[in-house]
Image (cartoon, each protein chain N blue to C red):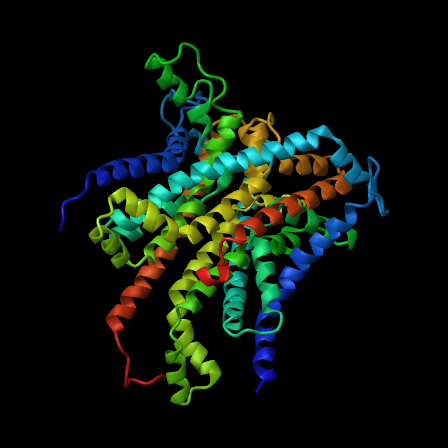
Length: 279
Length: 284
């Protein structure tokens, strides 16, 4: 190997600083959430305790943290499943040009770039003008899909642009029906990307704020709850909640990455299944 | 045979089309319609009046707020681009094994999957009056008094934008850099180009499309934002998004809609200009 140029060390230092910038604040509130009972929102630490975490589990003066947490999880799962299904179908359809595919493509891009407050305002207006009640599972769900679907579809487009069609042709030549080809050839090949789409779907929904602001109705999701807390809670309980929800997000990312890794291992171990047939 | 692919295609995209029609197209149309309505303090009244637009374009506040929005967008763009390009360049050309590349890349992307609001809140202990930054500056003797402009200021807004959105630059730029044929760089080196010349004349032009995609993300996210500006400026600065959300809070939906339409037009024109430089569909 050739020796590292001097620029490598400069850039490594830059990268390290960037990591500090990215993670430093989050780690700081992680530490401060163990603030002692009399401590405030900044250093110094007045002792170390789990007081603020325990406080989270007590009845809060305002809001309903655990209710909003479970709503956020349910909504996240709904958005995740829908995003994966709709993105795969959309990705498959976009492989051939059909009438209206151009318009639909620009709509997807529009959904991606439109200021989120317009979705919130527009969907809110749509429901109020048609006499429907906004609810997180209907209007909130739809509003979030306009943000997660473009990401899912862009990933699917990228996957299918690199997809080797000869696998499908081979399956067809061997007499597989279109459904069998999809089920046993296409889906297993794109599976790792689907895990990515699922991760996007869940986390983008779980953290979404702007699009659910006017569309969640009377029951808040967790980000809305946290935002409400920033205006009237000035104790480290805010940090404790922040730390917990960040840990939850990290756990979710960890789960998805592990699934992807195990999938890869298994595939590498299984190797070719030529001659074994599909049962 | 001609009609069938069209039919299956339509069937497969129909869920997508329905979601986008109901939750994207209809709401935009409705915002357009409502922007011509009038409002009292308690209700909104269907009408066809240019009142909201007259008021919007007649008010000097509008222009200063739009100017402020562009200011945030341009400064954030410049910072996220310089940082994002450097990070992507480091990952793509200085990290030699793929395992390390993936690991470091993941490290850059993980914060994207955590809550933006929490990430904003997490600047409080750092930037506050008694925060880490001020304590450090005082103990180093750089300043005597704690600085007041660290938190709840334009500085804090830009800092949060850079913190939240640099990733949107890193990912597309890294993606295009990874597709650059390494032999082109070797050819440049063999032809006697210095590292700087390779960066400027080979790598930069070849990553143009990634830069453009990153730019579109960052510019639209910043222009459409209302929550970062409100939180990080402590409600002291305004951008167009905040103008809209203030109107919404006062139930002035027609006026909010008019501002929203103007914002949407501004964003779309900006994108149209940027898209002249890159064909997104080809870049995926």
